[in-house]
Image (tube, rainbow, N blue to C red; front, side, top):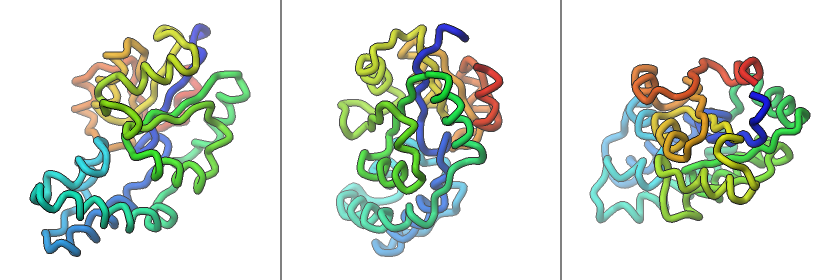
Length: 212
């Protein structure tokens, strides 16, 4: 893949395991508003479309603003205790950076919380650009976020590889006309991922080195 010059990564479920923090903040919010708490597996499958869309199916619409505020207030602290990098992420990113690839992040997580994660886990030095959906009109699976990053870093679709963990990542990559690799460490099942027919499916992020 000598023609690839830009690699765009999703954040949650791809590079970072923040599920413990998400689950804790989610059920804290449910308890505060007297809604039923949910199993970790249920919450995990709802992740990926931003925090408002995470909460919306489980509460009344009139409570959404309050729920989002409670969730975000709790999540600022929860992220610092309940998030970690997946194994060998630093090695993979360091390898790619040393090879001269431009690297970027495309996340549906709000900008503020993406940067809490990035700084806490000391990832900022690897990335040339970080873009989150709250700065755009559309969230993934719409391709806007990928198109904006390509425009910012002067890359054409055939020069780009996108790495995510969910069906929405496969859909966004296909719509942006970029090769997409899905790692099975996130919210979507293997069956759901295979239905989207991404360029490659990998079990762990370290497998990316072998592909490139």
